[in-house]
Length: 162
Image (tube, rainbow, N blue to C red; front, side, top):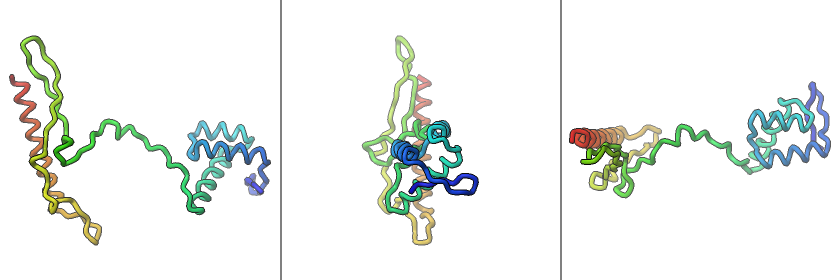
């Protein structure tokens, strides 16, 4: 039997309400505020009751050992971030330069190859048993990145001075 609380009393969902709710939950276990309002209107329930029902349904799945589809993450902060690696196959960062040519100025994308300056395996950043990170490895990584940034800046200055 399906139930929803109303003014402190539990009243059962009709079979139609339960089916419509289940379909909405299967479509999206994390609906937006606007979607919640539409679902509440469709079920003829208050929005907070629908919010609680979604929360309880997700909790029931977790207790049963199942997980609802994860909430979509906001990608706005991640969209412009390049993958930074320390291998020679993938550049660590990109330098945008302007190349002076005889006919016109044009933008050139240059990648700084770090294949010959990889960190040694003992310099990898690791976490010890206390949860603290190896400060030597972090320091080595920071100085490595600073050298690469300085090299890229020198290339940029050289390209713009021509």
